[in-house]
Amino acid sequence: MMKKIEKIWQELENEHLLKSRLLYRRYSGAIKPDVYVAVKYPEKLRCIAAHLNSTIELPLKSWAKLRDIKIEILPDDKQPDKQFLLILLLENEHRDIFSILCADLITQVAGITNEAELIKLLILRLEKWGLLFEKIGKQGLSEEAQRALYGEIFFLRKFLLNISNPYFCINSWKGPERSVQDFQFSDWAVEIKTTCGKKQQKMYISNERQLDISIIPKIFLVHYSLEVRQNHGETLNDLVDNLLDMLSQSSAAYNLFRLKLLEAGYFDSQRYLYEEVGYHIRQENIYKITEDFPKITESQIPKGVGDVRYSIVISADKNWVLDEYTLFQSLRKEVE
Image (tube, rainbow, N blue to C red; front, top):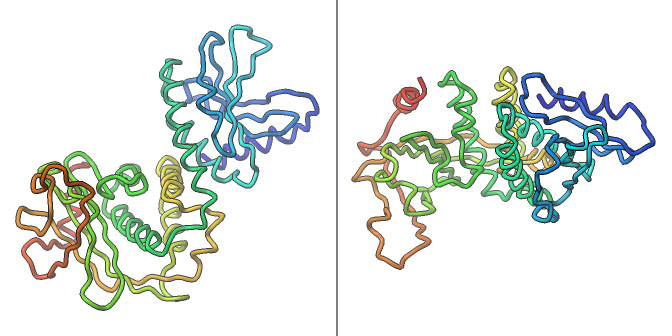
């Protein structure tokens, strides 16, 4: 999808117009609302254009502080009762990110026919875009964040190999959204923990709801003990590229994965930061959370106490240990 969007932009840019004009083209006849891939001249700014009734008021002030993108209203000279809402990219260095975001936007609005619903969704996506563009200036992921992301994507790869629906797998990955658990769907959740070091390793639980089975009936905890080395093992980039290759036959899943990488703070422009650090899984343990599993839950906390964070050390020979086959069989039942 992103390649097709990129191709449309390039073709529109080749027009070489000098006067002020909007060139636009529909991405696909399957997209129901009037949302177009467009280029605004003479600046040659890439954009997405939504064709809307001119009577609709749009909250331009709330979008005024968006970084590296600009929201603009352009009257339609040919149809006075219509206007274009333009979402313009101001910085060409972020073209790859903008392509991902536009592919996501087109996917999200594809079936919408009501203009009020379309605008509501556009507002939500713009808020998300703003948060993503704020992350661009940061100098890459911390070492801890790199390990955590590696662990989540390492599990995601196994998930894809065991479940026949790739979009479902990617959509259930909630880690980039800072959800309570890293993977969620219906009545189950999977939390991924990564540690490194040779000694007995603590796993840190970030809040009292993370392992609370009174909220979600089936919660699984997956622990990866990592060996981290310079220029040895699988890098974060290697793992990301492997997933992109696996998803190449499903454009919806591919685009969603790219978007979630952005949400996680992983940008192509910063790949050089992750080229030398390699990972190897020293040990892997899977646990099903039960009533007797060592944990702190919401019902155990006195009123007025908040921001609970604690650590656990688990022996691998306890009765809550699961094998990988059993875990994915349990998750597969919810999909099929």
